[in-house]
Image (cartoon, rainbow, N blue to C red; front, side, top):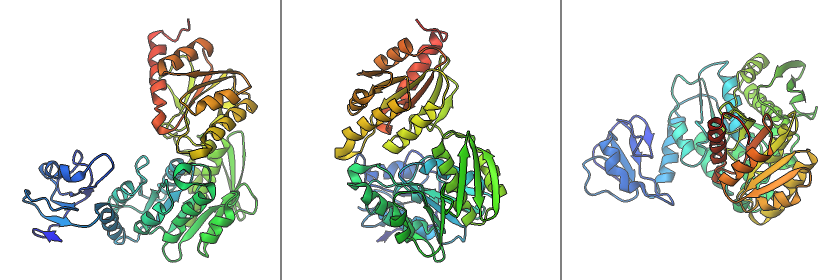
Length: 437
């Protein structure tokens, strides 16, 4: 139900603190807030209208009353996307989504202006906000889509209407919401159901769940992997990735470490080739990549160690990939680990598996904080393990046990707040002039 005069708006907002003049404000009801309480603030900031579930009686501005403002947000964004013929690439997966999204954007920008998801705004709120930024100047767009339960991608992807849809890999992430890895495979494959006519499904040829993904895909597919049968296949050694497509090949020195990032690069290459990019653009785009904050980023503000910040998030696959990177470092190595969350009943066993994996990788020190990582410490048999109750204790133990110049890699789920350890370590080291007691 529309109340008030028709208006033309420029942009959408769900946050009254960041509303711009001319925006329409969506009053989203969340678990910790109700946007209806901020309609007045949004209008004071310059919002031209509000979309609400319950009419606001004491405002003098146009308002559209709907049954579900979150659904309306997606629908409005979808209508806006329909105005553009811009090729859109949609990315999901259990690990690597954000890095692959950034790689795709870097490659596509070799061919023209590209819109991409900012940070990891990949949910039912973030995806519409990204789509709403699409403009005539954008030659391409790449949209990251996340999920923590079956059906979430199926709800979001119709608004995106991708021309290319990519699943990076299937693994144990958000098991608490999905219930099983099989369910994850089927849920991630929902992305293919939103493809536009003649769209391309990009599939990991090496993944255990390849057949599940292939069954959900349309006829037109592009595969990637180290398997020579993949349409886009590669070889990786000592930071050098060779990418082959039909009879053409390129070699690129990846600026991001680890074999998992070689996989990410192959995925990005396949997606970009699907929208018409050449291998030279793939090469130049990958060369231009920089580490994403909190994802295997070498920090320059910690004087006493070579510190690799991989603290943004964690699941078993990404932790094992990080351990692989750490194991290639020379000198003393230390893994600082917080809990991997949302793993359901398998959490303790999966944390124990990480301890075994780190032992086999010859990691010298394992420092942990959190409840589940107690099982990681217990199963670690390689070097020295210590479980701390506080970040202060964790920092003190690191400084006491890990010699100057050692490599420290920090990893944990978002809510583990492992950046707290990094900031404290940087502050302690800089205050002490980089000296150990």
